[in-house]
Image 1 (cartoon, rainbow, N blue to C red):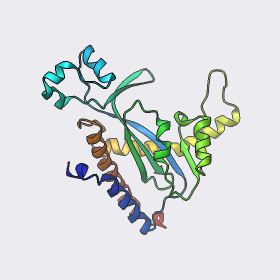
Image 2: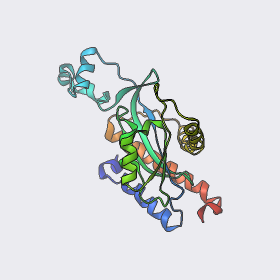
Image 3: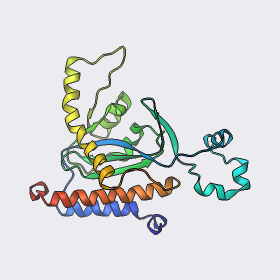
Image 4: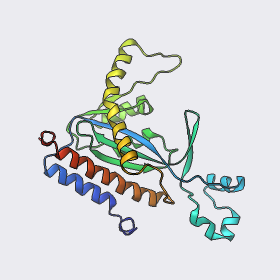
Length: 234
């Protein structure tokens, strides 16, 4: 709580990044951007209460009994992915494609599209111009954004009903998947090594602080593992 109120969690992340650069562990080999859902305990609200949340308002019963708001997360949202509903937030990360270090992160509500984190997630310190991401980031708008920023896109090409992928595009996607798989290793390590993803923090500010520290902890563990293999630090 003290770290959150002092607003120093992002600063701690940046200072550790500077320490790694000083030690010669530079970001290189390109970067991978992806996001994972952060579940929180589901809200059991009345229909009237849910309508108030969607409008960004508090219902009259909550105003009359403010203690009920202590356990109400008004910042979390529902999102439906492949027919399955999820409630909570989202942890968007950018990792170094070579070392797997988490160089950037952003905590957002899940209804914020993954592609909107590209400007916030890109790491300008990476010495390689390649950017990998899944098809959720595909589109001319984001290809143009990467080009303007001086990056070279390796975003997974998206198939559509009227425009099937060519044989060449399928081969490109197959190669890109071998790189994209590395970010799933990061999410898997966070889930299994840091006691899962379920978060019992109420509100976006507390969730951002909690997951900022969890991401930093993963960063520590990843670097300890890397430094045990000294050839990676060349």
